[in-house]
Amino acid sequence: MQHPSRLLRALLLSACAALACSSVSAQTAPAATVAATGAIKSANIFDVKPDASEAPGYATQTNGERAKVQPGNNAPMWRQVGAGVTGYSSLPKSEAPEAGNLIQPFVQYPGSSLTNAGEAWRQVRNNWLIPYGGALLLIILGAIALFYMTKGTIKQHGVDTGKKIERFTAFERSAHWSNAIAFSILGISGIVMAFGKFFLLPVMGLTLFGWLTYALKNMHNFAGPVFAVSLVVIFVTFLRDNMPSRGDLVWLLKGGGLLSGKEVPSHRFNAGEKLVFWGGVFFLGIVVVSSGFVLDKILPGLVYERGTMQIAHMIHAVATILMMAMFIGHIYIGTIGMQGAYQGMRTGYVDETWAREHHEYWYNDIKAGKIPAQRTEPLPPSKTVQI
Image (cartoon, rainbow, N blue to C red):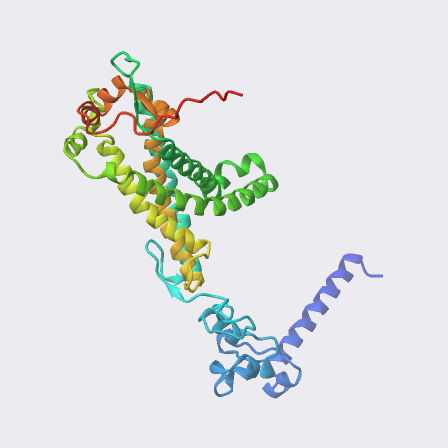
């Protein structure tokens, strides 16, 4: 009987001999024999094409033609969609002019790359309007806070005389407060819709934030027309006293005396208030209201396509950010920034000392009799009815 190790060695030698014989047979076999056995032949993957792609006009086939030769291949349809080809839609053209277009054509908005209009608008909004608009508002708020901490409220130097001058009539105050309330609703809702996901969503959660933005969006849409009408009333009411006059240039060059602490004489409205009136109420007001009406789809005769809405939104966003930046300064001066300013708008009257210190030319005209100190007729005393 052989030793086990010798038996194992013999088996290994027999297996190696069998493998060697098989290799020699494969090398000497004719090519026809290899092909007949189904052996895999190597090929360049870039040279392999489906038979259908070799047909004439393959690249220009319609989606129906492609489906006959390659079922499930919808490349022609998506190529047309990407190119902006209009498809079939049963919606009326007058109400839905772009119903057959899924993807807009390529454009390049200011600040975007050359891409389809939807992506171009997204780039402008996310890369420019949101970061730089938010930064501007934060800079304005920070500058006002710094000014308040260093300078504090602009105080009245003289003592009240007890003699009151009517600065705003009841009608003027009602127009102002209507505009101010509508502006506050629009400003708060606009800030939440534009920037809320960065500072409110992480705190409130998606569900509550969704309900909040939905409610504010509807408030925004309803407050817009009120703001537009009140702007017109404000413009007509205060136009006369906001016309350029002597002393305006000096007031601007000296910054109104905010840094020096010495008040610069002015008429009923100083040059800073006139800048807010002409720049914010008039110019930006026209831009904000007209673009907002486009977004609300209430301007008659306008074709409301996606491109129209995108352009209107970008213009609306820029104008509203600038308007809020101007009005924030106006709100500051009219509330905590200047002593007695808020009381003038709340009650309609200011003390004679306040008028002389802050609007000296206006006060002089009143003392000279050019402007009445009391513009509203006092109510007649009530009569006792004798029975």
